[in-house]
Amino acid sequence: MIKTFNSSDIDQLEKIYRINLINAITGFKSVNLIGTKSADSKPNVAVFSSVIHMGSNPPLLGFVMRPLPHKRDTYPNLKSTGHYTINHVTTDIYQQAHQTSAKYEKGISEFEECGLTEEYLNGFDAPFVKECSIKIGLSYVEEYAIKANNTILVIGKVEHLIVPENIIEDSGHLNIHEANSLTLSGLDTYFKTEKLGRMAYAAKPKTS
Amino acid sequence: MIKTFNSSDIDQLEKIYRINLINAITGFKSVNLIGTKSADSKPNVAVFSSVIHMGSNPPLLGFVMRPLPHKRDTYPNLKSTGHYTINHVTTDIYQQAHQTSAKYEKGISEFEECGLTEEYLNGFDAPFVKECSIKIGLSYVEEYAIKANNTILVIGKVEHLIVPENIIEDSGHLNIHEANSLTLSGLDTYFKTEKLGRMAYAAKPKTS
Image (cartoon, rainbow over all chains, first blue to last red; front, top):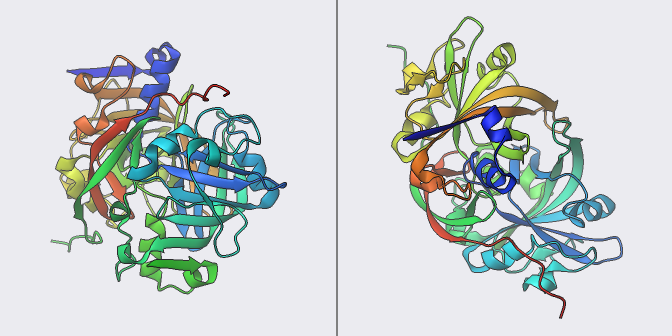
Protein backbone atom coordinates (compact mmCIF):
# COMPACT_ATOMS: atom_id res chain seq x y z
CA MET A 1 0.00 0.00 0.00
CA ILE A 2 1.11 3.51 -0.84
CA LYS A 3 0.67 6.44 1.54
CA THR A 4 0.42 9.94 0.12
CA PHE A 5 0.87 13.12 2.14
CA ASN A 6 0.03 16.40 0.46
CA SER A 7 1.19 19.79 1.67
CA SER A 8 -1.80 20.31 3.95
CA ASP A 9 -1.50 16.77 5.41
CA ILE A 10 2.12 17.59 6.29
CA ASP A 11 1.15 20.91 7.89
CA GLN A 12 -1.27 19.08 10.16
CA LEU A 13 1.13 16.38 11.36
CA GLU A 14 2.07 16.31 15.04
CA LYS A 15 5.38 18.16 15.45
CA ILE A 16 7.71 15.26 16.34
CA TYR A 17 6.10 12.99 13.75
CA ARG A 18 6.68 15.66 11.09
CA ILE A 19 10.30 16.19 12.18
CA ASN A 20 11.02 12.44 11.98
CA LEU A 21 9.26 12.03 8.65
CA ILE A 22 10.58 15.07 6.79
CA ASN A 23 14.13 14.58 8.05
CA ALA A 24 14.19 11.16 6.38
CA ILE A 25 12.84 11.98 2.94
CA THR A 26 16.00 13.35 1.35
CA GLY A 27 17.68 9.95 1.71
CA PHE A 28 20.87 9.02 3.54
CA LYS A 29 22.97 11.82 4.98
CA SER A 30 26.59 12.45 5.82
CA VAL A 31 27.28 12.48 9.55
CA ASN A 32 30.14 14.59 10.79
CA LEU A 33 31.47 16.21 13.91
CA ILE A 34 32.28 19.90 13.53
CA GLY A 35 35.03 21.12 15.85
CA THR A 36 35.65 24.74 16.77
CA LYS A 37 37.39 26.85 19.38
CA SER A 38 36.19 30.13 20.82
CA ALA A 39 38.26 33.32 20.76
CA ASP A 40 39.21 32.54 24.38
CA SER A 41 40.25 28.97 23.42
CA LYS A 42 37.29 26.94 24.69
CA PRO A 43 36.77 23.93 22.41
CA ASN A 44 33.40 22.80 21.05
CA VAL A 45 32.24 19.85 18.99
CA ALA A 46 28.79 19.11 17.58
CA VAL A 47 27.29 16.53 15.24
CA PHE A 48 25.88 17.72 11.88
CA SER A 49 24.05 15.81 9.17
CA SER A 50 24.01 18.62 6.63
CA VAL A 51 27.60 18.71 5.37
CA ILE A 52 27.64 18.70 1.56
CA HIS A 53 30.06 18.91 -1.33
CA MET A 54 29.96 22.31 -3.04
CA GLY A 55 32.83 21.91 -5.50
CA SER A 56 36.26 20.40 -5.92
CA ASN A 57 38.18 23.30 -7.49
CA PRO A 58 38.48 25.20 -5.22
CA PRO A 59 37.69 22.48 -2.66
CA LEU A 60 34.55 23.82 -0.96
CA LEU A 61 32.18 22.19 1.52
CA GLY A 62 28.91 23.54 2.86
CA PHE A 63 26.74 22.85 5.87
CA VAL A 64 23.38 24.14 7.04
CA MET A 65 22.81 25.50 10.52
CA ARG A 66 19.39 25.63 12.14
CA PRO A 67 18.17 29.13 13.02
CA LEU A 68 20.37 30.75 15.64
CA PRO A 69 21.02 30.36 18.48
CA HIS A 70 20.51 26.60 18.20
CA LYS A 71 24.01 25.11 17.96
CA ARG A 72 25.15 27.70 20.39
CA ASP A 73 28.92 27.60 20.05
CA THR A 74 29.75 26.36 16.54
CA TYR A 75 28.68 29.47 14.67
CA PRO A 76 30.16 32.22 16.88
CA ASN A 77 33.36 30.20 17.20
CA LEU A 78 33.92 29.71 13.48
CA LYS A 79 33.03 33.33 12.82
CA SER A 80 35.48 34.63 15.39
CA THR A 81 38.42 32.36 14.50
CA GLY A 82 37.65 31.78 10.81
CA HIS A 83 38.40 28.06 11.21
CA TYR A 84 36.60 24.81 11.88
CA THR A 85 37.06 21.08 11.35
CA ILE A 86 34.80 18.42 9.85
CA ASN A 87 35.41 14.85 11.03
CA HIS A 88 33.62 11.69 9.84
CA VAL A 89 31.58 9.87 12.47
CA THR A 90 32.57 6.19 12.57
CA THR A 91 31.24 2.92 13.97
CA ASP A 92 33.33 3.26 17.12
CA ILE A 93 32.09 6.66 18.23
CA TYR A 94 28.60 7.21 16.87
CA GLN A 95 27.07 7.07 20.33
CA GLN A 96 29.44 9.73 21.66
CA ALA A 97 28.89 11.76 18.49
CA HIS A 98 25.13 11.65 18.91
CA GLN A 99 25.42 12.79 22.52
CA THR A 100 26.99 16.08 21.34
CA SER A 101 23.51 17.05 20.11
CA ALA A 102 22.33 17.51 23.69
CA LYS A 103 21.82 21.12 24.73
CA TYR A 104 24.93 21.77 26.77
CA GLU A 105 25.46 25.24 28.20
CA LYS A 106 27.49 27.75 26.26
CA GLY A 107 31.21 27.31 26.94
CA ILE A 108 30.91 23.66 28.01
CA SER A 109 33.26 21.34 26.07
CA GLU A 110 31.29 18.54 24.43
CA PHE A 111 34.64 16.83 23.93
CA GLU A 112 34.89 16.31 27.67
CA GLU A 113 31.20 15.73 28.28
CA CYS A 114 30.85 13.14 25.51
CA GLY A 115 34.15 11.26 25.74
CA LEU A 116 35.79 12.57 22.58
CA THR A 117 39.37 13.82 22.32
CA GLU A 118 40.48 17.16 20.86
CA GLU A 119 43.54 16.98 18.66
CA TYR A 120 45.61 19.79 17.15
CA LEU A 121 47.39 19.03 13.89
CA ASN A 122 49.52 20.89 11.34
CA GLY A 123 49.39 24.11 13.36
CA PHE A 124 45.66 24.46 12.65
CA ASP A 125 43.86 26.28 15.48
CA ALA A 126 40.49 24.45 15.39
CA PRO A 127 40.29 21.07 17.14
CA PHE A 128 40.11 17.86 15.14
CA VAL A 129 38.45 14.81 16.69
CA LYS A 130 41.21 12.32 17.46
CA GLU A 131 38.90 9.27 17.27
CA CYS A 132 37.84 10.04 13.66
CA SER A 133 39.84 8.63 10.78
CA ILE A 134 38.91 11.26 8.17
CA LYS A 135 39.56 14.83 9.30
CA ILE A 136 39.23 18.10 7.41
CA GLY A 137 40.39 21.55 8.47
CA LEU A 138 38.49 24.41 6.81
CA SER A 139 38.60 28.18 6.60
CA TYR A 140 35.33 30.10 6.54
CA VAL A 141 34.54 31.56 3.11
CA GLU A 142 31.02 32.92 3.12
CA GLU A 143 27.46 32.29 4.27
CA TYR A 144 23.92 32.65 2.96
CA ALA A 145 20.94 33.48 5.17
CA ILE A 146 18.11 31.31 3.82
CA LYS A 147 14.98 33.44 3.75
CA ALA A 148 12.54 30.53 3.50
CA ASN A 149 13.25 29.26 7.03
CA ASN A 150 16.02 31.37 8.65
CA THR A 151 18.67 28.69 8.37
CA ILE A 152 22.24 29.56 7.35
CA LEU A 153 24.37 27.88 4.69
CA VAL A 154 28.02 28.16 5.72
CA ILE A 155 30.68 27.57 3.07
CA GLY A 156 34.31 26.76 3.82
CA LYS A 157 37.46 25.90 1.94
CA VAL A 158 39.49 22.78 2.67
CA GLU A 159 42.87 23.78 4.10
CA HIS A 160 43.94 20.39 5.49
CA LEU A 161 42.73 16.92 4.60
CA ILE A 162 43.94 14.07 6.80
CA VAL A 163 43.08 10.50 5.78
CA PRO A 164 44.44 6.98 6.23
CA GLU A 165 46.81 6.33 3.33
CA ASN A 166 45.47 2.80 2.73
CA ILE A 167 41.98 3.99 1.76
CA ILE A 168 43.18 6.24 -1.10
CA GLU A 169 43.13 4.62 -4.52
CA ASP A 170 45.46 5.62 -7.36
CA SER A 171 42.47 7.30 -9.02
CA GLY A 172 41.89 9.55 -6.01
CA HIS A 173 38.82 7.53 -4.95
CA LEU A 174 38.56 7.40 -1.18
CA ASN A 175 37.18 4.20 0.35
CA ILE A 176 35.43 5.90 3.23
CA HIS A 177 33.57 2.70 4.16
CA GLU A 178 36.95 1.11 4.93
CA ALA A 179 37.54 3.94 7.38
CA ASN A 180 34.22 2.93 9.04
CA SER A 181 32.47 6.16 8.10
CA LEU A 182 28.73 5.91 8.74
CA THR A 183 25.61 7.36 7.21
CA LEU A 184 22.50 8.68 8.94
CA SER A 185 18.79 8.48 8.20
CA GLY A 186 16.64 11.19 9.71
CA LEU A 187 18.04 12.58 12.93
CA ASP A 188 18.93 9.49 14.86
CA THR A 189 19.32 6.26 12.88
CA TYR A 190 22.90 5.26 12.05
CA PHE A 191 23.89 2.85 9.29
CA LYS A 192 26.96 0.98 8.13
CA THR A 193 27.34 0.57 4.39
CA GLU A 194 28.06 -2.26 2.01
CA LYS A 195 29.49 -1.56 -1.42
CA LEU A 196 27.16 -2.41 -4.26
CA GLY A 197 29.21 -1.18 -7.19
CA ARG A 198 31.26 1.54 -8.78
CA MET A 199 29.91 2.86 -12.04
CA ALA A 200 32.02 3.99 -14.97
CA TYR A 201 31.73 7.58 -16.13
CA ALA A 202 28.41 7.67 -17.97
CA ALA A 203 29.09 8.21 -21.65
CA LYS A 204 26.38 9.11 -24.11
CA PRO A 205 25.62 6.04 -26.22
CA LYS A 206 26.74 6.33 -29.82
CA THR A 207 23.95 7.59 -32.07
CA SER A 208 22.30 4.58 -33.65
CA MET B 1 50.00 5.56 7.82
CA ILE B 2 48.29 8.94 7.60
CA LYS B 3 48.30 11.04 4.46
CA THR B 4 47.92 14.81 4.77
CA PHE B 5 46.99 17.13 1.92
CA ASN B 6 47.20 20.85 2.53
CA SER B 7 45.53 23.48 0.42
CA SER B 8 48.44 23.82 -1.99
CA ASP B 9 48.78 20.01 -2.35
CA ILE B 10 45.09 19.91 -3.32
CA ASP B 11 45.53 22.72 -5.86
CA GLN B 12 48.28 20.74 -7.54
CA LEU B 13 46.41 17.44 -7.85
CA GLU B 14 45.59 16.12 -11.30
CA LYS B 15 42.02 17.18 -12.15
CA ILE B 16 40.24 13.79 -12.10
CA TYR B 17 42.15 12.69 -8.99
CA ARG B 18 41.05 15.88 -7.23
CA ILE B 19 37.43 15.45 -8.33
CA ASN B 20 37.35 11.85 -7.02
CA LEU B 21 39.09 12.75 -3.75
CA ILE B 22 37.21 15.93 -2.84
CA ASN B 23 33.82 14.51 -3.82
CA ALA B 24 34.30 11.77 -1.21
CA ILE B 25 35.42 13.78 1.81
CA THR B 26 32.02 15.01 3.00
CA GLY B 27 30.95 11.41 3.70
CA PHE B 28 28.02 9.46 2.31
CA LYS B 29 25.50 11.31 0.15
CA SER B 30 21.85 11.04 -0.74
CA VAL B 31 21.27 9.86 -4.28
CA ASN B 32 18.13 10.99 -6.02
CA LEU B 33 16.62 11.37 -9.46
CA ILE B 34 15.19 14.82 -10.15
CA GLY B 35 12.33 14.81 -12.66
CA THR B 36 11.12 17.85 -14.58
CA LYS B 37 9.12 18.75 -17.66
CA SER B 38 9.80 21.63 -20.03
CA ALA B 39 7.21 24.29 -20.85
CA ASP B 40 6.50 22.33 -24.05
CA SER B 41 6.08 19.08 -22.05
CA LYS B 42 9.35 17.30 -22.75
CA PRO B 43 10.33 15.23 -19.69
CA ASN B 44 13.79 15.14 -18.15
CA VAL B 45 15.39 13.16 -15.35
CA ALA B 46 18.88 13.47 -13.87
CA VAL B 47 20.74 11.99 -10.91
CA PHE B 48 21.82 14.34 -8.09
CA SER B 49 23.88 13.64 -4.99
CA SER B 50 23.37 17.04 -3.38
CA VAL B 51 19.79 16.89 -2.11
CA ILE B 52 19.65 17.99 1.54
CA HIS B 53 17.16 18.63 4.29
CA MET B 54 16.63 22.35 4.92
CA GLY B 55 13.81 22.21 7.45
CA SER B 56 10.68 20.33 8.41
CA ASN B 57 8.26 23.21 9.10
CA PRO B 58 7.69 24.27 6.38
CA PRO B 59 9.00 21.09 4.70
CA LEU B 60 11.92 22.39 2.60
CA LEU B 61 14.59 20.52 0.65
CA GLY B 62 17.61 21.96 -1.13
CA PHE B 63 19.94 20.79 -3.85
CA VAL B 64 23.07 22.22 -5.42
CA MET B 65 23.48 22.57 -9.16
CA ARG B 66 26.85 22.81 -10.85
CA PRO B 67 27.48 26.06 -12.74
CA LEU B 68 25.10 26.44 -15.66
CA PRO B 69 24.61 25.12 -18.24
CA HIS B 70 25.76 21.76 -16.88
CA LYS B 71 22.58 19.84 -16.12
CA ARG B 72 21.06 21.35 -19.19
CA ASP B 73 17.35 20.70 -18.72
CA THR B 74 16.67 20.43 -14.99
CA TYR B 75 17.12 24.09 -14.13
CA PRO B 76 15.27 25.78 -17.02
CA ASN B 77 12.46 23.24 -16.65
CA LEU B 78 11.91 23.76 -12.94
CA LYS B 79 12.15 27.51 -13.40
CA SER B 80 9.57 27.58 -16.17
CA THR B 81 7.05 25.20 -14.58
CA GLY B 82 7.81 25.88 -10.90
CA HIS B 83 7.72 22.13 -10.18
CA TYR B 84 10.07 19.18 -9.91
CA THR B 85 10.23 15.76 -8.30
CA ILE B 86 12.86 14.09 -6.13
CA ASN B 87 12.90 10.26 -6.19
CA HIS B 88 15.18 7.96 -4.16
CA VAL B 89 17.56 5.81 -6.19
CA THR B 90 17.20 2.16 -5.20
CA THR B 91 19.11 -1.10 -5.60
CA ASP B 92 17.08 -2.07 -8.66
CA ILE B 93 17.75 1.02 -10.75
CA TYR B 94 21.06 2.51 -9.70
CA GLN B 95 22.68 1.64 -13.00
CA GLN B 96 19.94 3.35 -15.01
CA ALA B 97 20.03 6.28 -12.58
CA HIS B 98 23.79 6.69 -13.04
CA GLN B 99 23.40 6.65 -16.82
CA THR B 100 21.26 9.83 -16.61
CA SER B 101 24.48 11.69 -15.80
CA ALA B 102 25.65 11.26 -19.40
CA LYS B 103 25.58 14.45 -21.45
CA TYR B 104 22.45 13.94 -23.52
CA GLU B 105 21.39 16.68 -25.91
CA LYS B 106 18.90 19.28 -24.74
CA GLY B 107 15.34 18.03 -25.16
CA ILE B 108 16.29 14.31 -25.12
CA SER B 109 14.33 12.32 -22.53
CA GLU B 110 16.69 10.50 -20.18
CA PHE B 111 13.65 8.47 -19.12
CA GLU B 112 13.61 6.84 -22.54
CA GLU B 113 17.36 6.74 -23.03
CA CYS B 114 18.07 5.18 -19.63
CA GLY B 115 15.15 2.77 -19.23
CA LEU B 116 13.22 4.65 -16.54
CA THR B 117 9.48 5.30 -16.58
CA GLU B 118 7.76 8.69 -16.14
CA GLU B 119 4.73 8.64 -13.92
CA TYR B 120 2.18 11.38 -13.24
CA LEU B 121 0.46 11.33 -9.85
CA ASN B 122 -2.03 13.48 -7.91
CA GLY B 123 -2.39 15.93 -10.79
CA PHE B 124 1.23 17.10 -10.32
CA ASP B 125 2.76 18.27 -13.59
CA ALA B 126 6.39 17.15 -13.06
CA PRO B 127 7.19 13.49 -13.73
CA PHE B 128 7.88 11.09 -10.88
CA VAL B 129 10.08 8.05 -11.50
CA LYS B 130 7.79 5.01 -11.44
CA GLU B 131 10.56 2.59 -10.41
CA CYS B 132 11.39 4.55 -7.23
CA SER B 133 9.58 3.74 -4.01
CA ILE B 134 9.99 7.14 -2.31
CA LYS B 135 8.77 10.06 -4.44
CA ILE B 136 8.49 13.74 -3.60
CA GLY B 137 6.78 16.49 -5.60
CA LEU B 138 8.12 19.99 -4.90
CA SER B 139 7.37 23.56 -5.80
CA TYR B 140 10.26 25.95 -6.40
CA VAL B 141 10.70 28.45 -3.54
CA GLU B 142 13.95 30.35 -4.05
CA GLU B 143 17.59 30.03 -5.05
CA TYR B 144 20.99 31.33 -4.01
CA ALA B 145 23.83 31.96 -6.45
CA ILE B 146 26.95 30.81 -4.60
CA LYS B 147 29.68 33.38 -5.23
CA ALA B 148 32.56 31.12 -4.20
CA ASN B 149 32.16 28.77 -7.18
CA ASN B 150 29.13 29.80 -9.27
CA THR B 151 26.97 26.91 -8.14
CA ILE B 152 23.28 27.41 -7.34
CA LEU B 153 21.41 26.26 -4.26
CA VAL B 154 17.78 25.61 -5.22
CA ILE B 155 15.19 25.38 -2.45
CA GLY B 156 11.77 23.79 -2.85
CA LYS B 157 8.77 22.99 -0.70
CA VAL B 158 7.32 19.48 -0.43
CA GLU B 159 3.85 19.43 -2.02
CA HIS B 160 3.42 15.65 -2.32
CA LEU B 161 5.16 12.86 -0.48
CA ILE B 162 4.52 9.33 -1.71
CA VAL B 163 5.94 6.43 0.31
CA PRO B 164 5.21 2.74 0.94
CA GLU B 165 2.92 2.58 3.96
CA ASN B 166 4.81 -0.33 5.54
CA ILE B 167 8.03 1.67 6.03
CA ILE B 168 6.38 4.41 8.13
CA GLU B 169 6.62 3.92 11.88
CA ASP B 170 4.08 5.30 14.35
CA SER B 171 6.70 7.88 15.37
CA GLY B 172 6.98 9.20 11.79
CA HIS B 173 10.36 7.51 11.32
CA LEU B 174 10.74 6.32 7.75
CA ASN B 175 12.67 3.08 7.20
CA ILE B 176 14.20 4.16 3.90
CA HIS B 177 16.60 1.18 3.92
CA GLU B 178 13.55 -1.12 3.72
CA ALA B 179 12.56 0.73 0.57
CA ASN B 180 16.03 -0.15 -0.82
CA SER B 181 17.19 3.47 -0.90
CA LEU B 182 20.94 3.67 -1.54
CA THR B 183 23.72 6.01 -0.58
CA LEU B 184 26.61 7.28 -2.71
CA SER B 185 30.27 7.92 -2.04
CA GLY B 186 31.98 10.40 -4.33
CA LEU B 187 30.45 10.52 -7.78
CA ASP B 188 30.14 6.90 -8.69
CA THR B 189 30.25 4.38 -5.84
CA TYR B 190 26.88 3.08 -4.67
CA PHE B 191 26.24 1.45 -1.29
CA LYS B 192 23.49 -0.49 0.43
CA THR B 193 23.09 0.15 4.13
CA GLU B 194 22.81 -1.92 7.26
CA LYS B 195 21.19 -0.49 10.38
CA LEU B 196 23.55 -0.06 13.29
CA GLY B 197 21.24 1.60 15.77
CA ARG B 198 18.73 4.29 16.54
CA MET B 199 19.75 6.72 19.24
CA ALA B 200 17.40 8.27 21.75
CA TYR B 201 17.06 12.05 21.80
CA ALA B 202 20.27 13.25 23.43
CA ALA B 203 19.43 14.70 26.81
CA LYS B 204 21.89 16.73 28.85
CA PRO B 205 23.13 14.58 31.73
CA LYS B 206 21.87 15.70 35.14
CA THR B 207 24.32 17.98 36.86
CA SER B 208 26.41 15.86 39.20
